[in-house]
Length: 521
Ligand code: IFG
Image 1: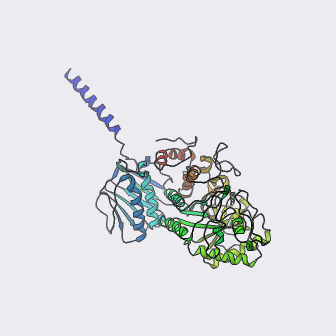
Image 2: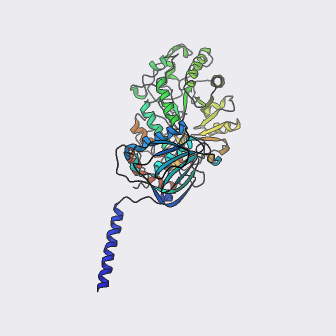
Image 3: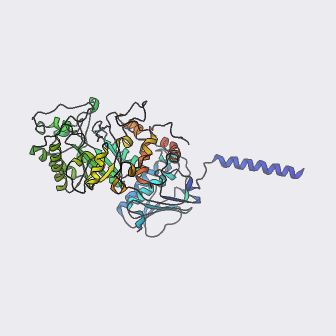
């Protein structure tokens, strides 16, 4: 009888213990169970965890200013939810337990953006060849933390991450997103927020579509009407806006700190109505055009045989180059339906000389392959597959942005209220389940610089609408650009994507909760 009572007592205590155990948030102990996007190259778990506390500090080796800035950005991102200050300290040896340790090393396998993350109970160590690699590894650390880390108010924690090691590096060197600030203008703070979004998923390029028929969005001091006139409106006739040169420099600096390159686009000779409305002399007939607030394309052209046009372009490129540290100037070149073929070819060669004179490389929509191009030009594929093939024939690198797969302004399906659908509907699986290296016959991996997902904003007017079109498809393009070719399977990815729900909610994202994705806590 006594033994039975003892057994009953033990059983009750066990029930009590295990039920209590389930109340506290489970300490993450299995790195392999984490739902990282983009998927890392390799992950090994060691079955324990590291806890961030108010005593945790960030140690960096040596006195690299760039590395220190990366540490500061990380500290600033962790502070709102944890309430902790994370002092940044220099050291040349592994710090005491309970800290972060970022060090620059020599490891060719990692390249410029790869990293080695080693997490034990005592230390979180990030090693990389460059500060950019440390920054990319920090995005992984953030995703290993509970979703509530993304909140901007104090949360209870605990702040634990599973132990183990991750070796990771990108598949493509150009992993970009494009924002069209011409059809609808998005100000500096919105652009910075978009930079934060793409940085979180290890993207490294923001292509800014700065000029089009509906708006010229970058101040050019020598030609002030471009913004005082050409920047005043947008699609639908609402007030447009523009970046002063100080605004643009602020965006570039914010992006550079996050190891993101800005690629500015001046779309020409077509898509130029805003400039043609601002200066009569840019029009062949000498008559200024009216400002345009519709969404038609292909009706405008610079006067391609007039010398003044090239003086104008030289002034624009000079001022843009002076505040653009990246190697590329995107000259657009798309849908120049009002420009005669021979005039277009002449125009592209003239503009290319101007860009080269200012020390930059030309990037353009793949329509530019009609012209004679320098070997360092980059063609951005968007619609005609033969243009991508011609680019390869001309030994040009290609950035893959096929409208049918990567245009973020395409509707999800026929019920979407935002977006267009001329290239088709892009549900989450359509946007993920394609391989740029096997998308066009004759355009192989060796020809591809990378991938980019453009967001055209004819129908997108604010950040809420931007988030709806961008999330969650952005994460798929980030994975296509970063993760190894093998192992990309929609059926596996959709589970990892579904597990982002609590993080999307903590980020307060207005995301599209597609029925194709098994959203879960
Ligand atoms: N094509 C135009 C864009 C934009 C887009 C909307 C390119 C290169 C349709 N050109 O895409 O300006 O209007 O989906």
